[in-house]
Amino acid sequence: MLLWIHAAATLLAAIVLQRRSGFAGASPFMQQLGPAPANPRDDSCERLNRLEEAALAKATGSEFEEYRKALAAWRKAHPGYQPSCRTDALGKQLCKDGAKLSALLGPATGDEWDAWMRELAVHEATPDDCANFAARQVVEMWPPHVWHWPQQTSEVILDELLGDAEYASYADALHLAPPFGAPQVKFRHRPQGRFQMHRVEQLNHWRVLRKAVPGLELSQLEQVVEFGGGTGNLPATFSDLGYTGVHFVYDFPTMILMQRYWLHYSGVPAVLGMDVPQGTVRSTGNMRIVLENSLSDELVSHLDTSKLQDSLFVATYSFTEADFESRAKIWRVVKKFGVIQLAFWAQFYGKDNMRHLEELVETDLKPSHWVAWWTMPPGWHATPGIAYYLVAVRKDRGNVRRLRCVEELGCTSSTAHMLLLTET
Image 1 (cartoon, helix red, strand yellow):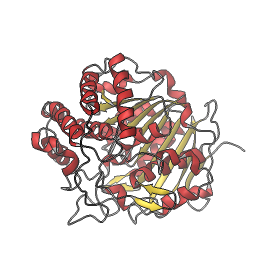
Image 2: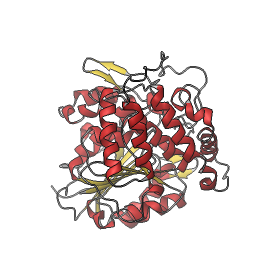
Image 3: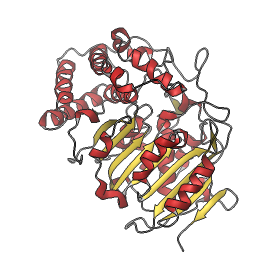
């Protein structure tokens, strides 16, 4: 079983080679919506809302399982764009917990992400903004622009996914999946159906890992910890792929409230880590999503640290965009993980990521892990700059021992920065 810490697009910010921090005018990736779907004539929406309120008040036990079943039935009957009976209830829950944010954020730091989090906190504590969150967040471009950033990625990765001989392994989370998140985000269309680029990006990272680490499958994952959850899309993606373990999302307190909103909007259940008692969180046969406040130490109390050998750490940009203190805090745990995947820029706001990661490999990974580090293919991210993948596999792993440099993934002798691989 594996533990996955994944740093998704939540912490992406802007310098010349990174994503833009702001947008002007209308986005070409957003669509105009008509009126929301009508509320159902039966009491299914009201019943779901009552179950949701009870389940969030008690994040374990029979109440939550009853809510899970009701939400799954609702998602099947009402995918995508949600009626007002749901957005009203979700908005009330958002503001209820948003009222607590001022005590959780701490002193202002003055950096761009801190400013974005404080602006988001105001929206999440203002009744009118909460009630209209689904209608306004994307349209009015409330920062951070986690819905807009993935839309700038080239569709080349979509076509490569569709052309993959193993596309059937991903289809349930792509064109066969119900829509996830903000309904204003445009779909990309292919003969197979319609696609969301935030899903395409996530599935391409997972595709890279499956090909670089032969034998790695979701069925081996017992725990997932995602560092920087972006829109909340990854746990929903894994849910659509049939994942049944525990998925932790580790992010700012403002972000995890937003992620819970969009997960519940999309019919995927989640709870806040602060509402979960201390002690190891384990799967009960159904996927569990726990949203952890990165400004606290609650995550550590919920992890099963006995699973480190069969654990997976994935950081797509946020680990290498975090300050060094935050990196050190999480690295103390993840450096012992069985599988590690990073995607990153060489430099970020003056931080030399190449040098920092070389130091971590030499000090912490080289003695215990095989390592492949290569340049990401052009078009696989949303900028014209150069990005990298680093994948490491512990030498003493049981069912996934080997690591490969795969030309299909852009890894060749000319693109490799470092190859410390097992003998063939």
